Length: 303
Image 1 (cartoon, rainbow, N blue to C red):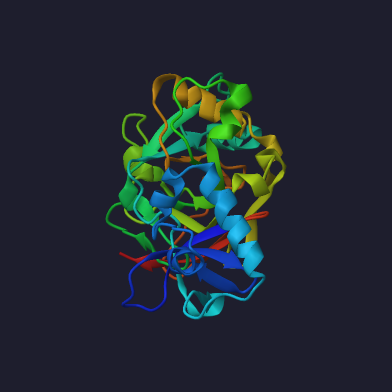
Image 2: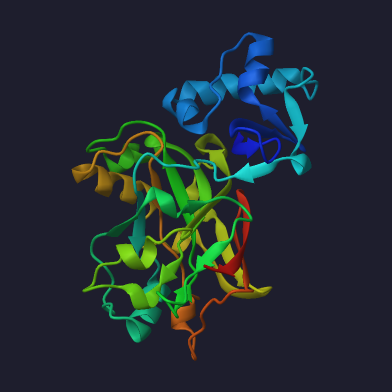
């Protein structure tokens, strides 16, 4: 199932939808008409657990494209928001999680050339999140080194505390695309949160694809272009720490809760690793894509 948060028009409230072909089915309204109650927001739906996905999938399949009046809107006519517009707490970011990215970072940033022995974890505040097509803000008073990072993001579906790697994927609700924006010149004494935590620095979307449709998250191509030129192109198979390892590792000391987001790291091809280095400026456009999920397009604008 492909789940979205959308607005029917600029003044409408944000609502939970499911994509069915070229339609967005409003799950709460659809549920009212078919006698199956569904919530109107993504976080409430995630809270219901995996059974909600199974029930909703079955109900939509049984409708066979014949949705009651007022319960479905053409996808082309809605405004997609970030699937979780306001996460309950900080996003978990994973640094240096692809071998070639470790090497390029060591050449241009103050990071070690040695492969990490444990996941490198940082966080991004909820205020970093923006949805599809929203502008990434470039504040030249703060940064002259705005950089891009395409990432697969995992969305947690159940409370996870001390889970094993063998069971970890069972705690994942689904997957989405994240762009981990980074102001490379804003790192402070080795700390990354100000560099990566500024407003608009976590584009997210365009949807959440539920875990049943992506049984193996380590087989997905991911890429990013700047102004139509490919900068990053890799596959999640090359992660140093796989999704199951990340869930297990974080949950050893930090309880993961429904709706938590783990951005799993980026491959080589970031601007800091170019020779000469390349940075984003107002007027640029970036497009990030993860196979099986979709693409995010964002203009860079002057803050």
